[in-house]
Structures are given as structure tokens and as C-alpha cells.
Length: 154
Image 1 (cartoon, rainbow, N blue to C red):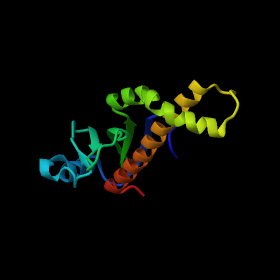
Image 2 (image 1 turned 30 degrees about the vertical axis):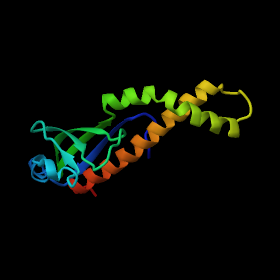
Image 3 (image 1 turned 45 degrees about the vertical axis):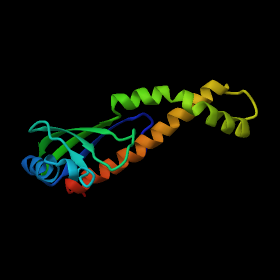
């Protein structure tokens, strides 16, 4: 399911203990050399019970979520609470993109909507926000699948 705003909160139940989750994060993604960044999907461990990571990709993408997590012990392993948000620069880009999307969305609106029911400025803003919501949603789904594989979530 794609979120309606660029903010996503979820909980993962892992059979791994809290220490195993931290060890998996640290051994797999903590120490990334500069030349290997393209090949490693995650970087940066910040605290023993909490972590903050970003996927590292070989191309530019303003939709990549910042992933914040807390690891809590559970009866059968650990519970990991994840929050994904856009970076502040992406929020600024999203708000400033209305001018860039205006010519494109005007053509789309003129072809699809022949009446001024919504008003063209509102439709332009809606199309710009829709692009960012879809972009963030797809990247958040990819990040969640990566974390589920890493933490061995069923």
C-alpha cells in the first residue's frame, strides 16, 4: 500500500534478538568505503537500540526515504518500529516543483478536463504532489522489503 503523504510508519516482528538485529545491521551495512557505496544498499548506524539509515543507490533520486528505527525486545525475537520520511531537501523540492509541473499538467488538464470544476491551479498542485507521493511510496516499499529480508521477517 502506498502512503498518501511522504511519511510511513510500520512495525516489523523479527525472530532475531535485539543484539542479532544490531549485529546484522553493523556487519552488513555499517562500514562502507567510498568506492563500494554504489553496491551497498544501506549505511550509518547511530545508536545501540536505535538506527538511522539511508539506502545508497548509484543514481540521484529525491524520493529516497530516510529510515529511522527502534528495536525493542519481544517474546519471540524483537520488534522493530520503522518511520520513513522524505529528507528536508526533498520537501523543499516537492513544494517548489509546482512551477516545473505547471506546463506539463496544464496540457494534461486541458486534454482531460474541459471544465473549470477544480480550477487549474489546484489541479497543477495535485499532479505535482501525486508525482512525489508515488515516487516516495515506491521507494518506501522497496526499503521495507529490503529491511524485511535483512531482519528475516516472515
